[in-house]
Length: 316
View 1 (cartoon, rainbow, N blue to C red):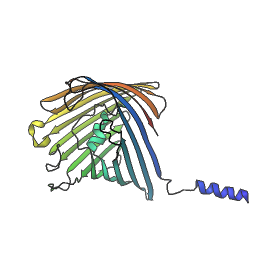
View 2 (tube, rainbow, N blue to C red):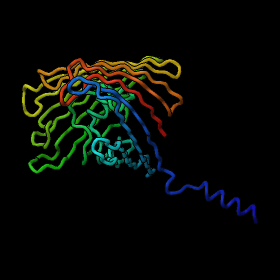
View 3 (cartoon, rainbow, N blue to C red):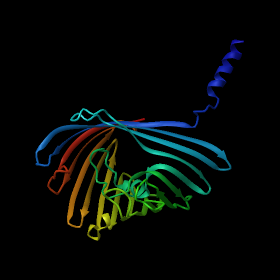
């Protein structure tokens, strides 16, 4: 009798349950930095805490079709200056279907320009310092996207975002199209996004064309990203181009990352930023890093100058 009961309990514990298709992941990161203020003085050590929790769910619908959903939550650190409590913000909130026809996704998500092309410039571990420039539509609610099946490394996608606006008469406030090719060590992505003139916000009425390329060869990796923005805020004088070039070298449990960014906010305001970072991996999930970010332009009231930083990150 005891043997039968033990077998029954073991079978119940190993049987599929409602949570069998749900996975949890995330990270906890703490970073400290010392940066120049607007007046050019060292403002001392400041901290930046970052927490992320991701929930993924999927269901096999049969006939080669899968339904999936994702919730991505982030937590900002508590603001010591204002005594404000830490806030939880929702990043991705998506639901979709995938199969032989490709993938259809709806919900809150990053556009292709930001999440696929410009994200290729995110080669540094630092949460507060990076060389990912551009003037992008970014993550938006009420989006829908389609990505084709992979044809020998080639994929295309199209997305639209219906942002609420009292003055907007368009069905989609932004439309983004992407083409991607990946084969062995080479990845190339191209995206073009147009934002409706009536979209509420400071970056309305623009067209972004973005191109990114990455090459991996053993311990070396090189990436180049370019974005051309036209007619920002309906002003032809605000046509400008940003570009970034960077790379990394991995040796043992260590990695050195370096890059340079040509950052334009208008045709008359151009910054040249460079950054270098050293990372040490204790394991695949735990690492420490230290780096320096330097801006060629002098600090302003809205932009800090040089920054030296260090931090630790654990993923799960």
